[in-house]
Length: 253
Image 1 (cartoon, rainbow, N blue to C red):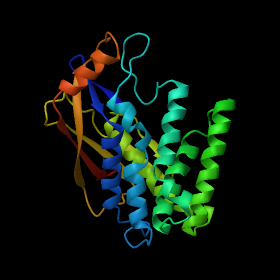
Image 2: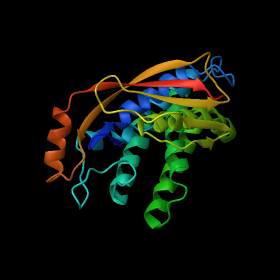
Image 3: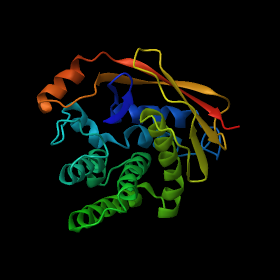
Image 4: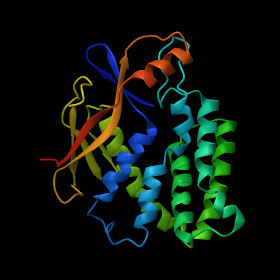
């Protein structure tokens, strides 16, 4: 889950699935860098939508920390994080095991595996080294099935990574600008409380869309407190009504 403060004394929650759906929608409107005419555009959109698919089961059964606070995507225990990324890499790579993968399906699955590797390059320890070795082997199998070279995959991955970061900036309520892969991502305002009419604006430079565009992503609001355990947190989330966070992307001026 992606969790951000929401006044007064609340937490805004966006699932990884919904965050990834927003990333894919942003990429669908991407007009720069040859993306609209790329022969791999469908694979890019699929990978953007599914890049965090391993979180699906974890978000459906949320976990609390030792202090009763909800775990978010940053605080998840190491063993569980590796397990969910193993599942996320394997889910869409299964067809390659039979050697019958469509090249574009293999490309999309390779991008997802590459995301797992890139995201965890800084993690140290035997468990992480073993995980990265497994993910790399699977990615290379998928690359062979796709007919792409690693350099080509890395070029495509730039767009999955960028839209992931833009979506995360909006969903996580970031307030500081960052520069990522040559693009300045600058949140313009913090979202208000979750009443169904919230909007957050993120400015980009260079601007890759045809014009300022508003997207929507599902969110829920829960109390900002310690919970008695996983079950109480799950009930609170399940009973929280969904509302739509409006995310407006504009050119940085």
